[in-house]
Length: 124
Image (cartoon, rainbow, N blue to C red):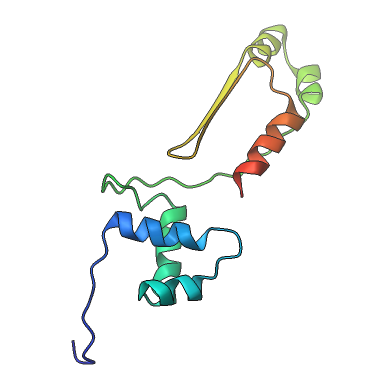
């Protein structure tokens, strides 16, 4: 390179490790980047890729993103629902998997307060 620096190619696992260091409470991207010999802007780019699910260990370019979730009061829905729709609401299921992080399954009627608390805890 013209400026005398040697370009270091990081593996996906190294990028994930560096990004995960920046996600720890109290961590600074600039401090982690400096300690790892990486430009902070590059670490921010890796964080975007990580959050979009593009830093998978298997090398795949699977694109997954967090989707907004709205929890509404089932009472309003049930009032307008037919008997068949009410039965479907009562015996539904929710399955959420965050690979390497969490697997959540809710069978039957979900308690909105509990589900909200679980989902909020995953943001941390």
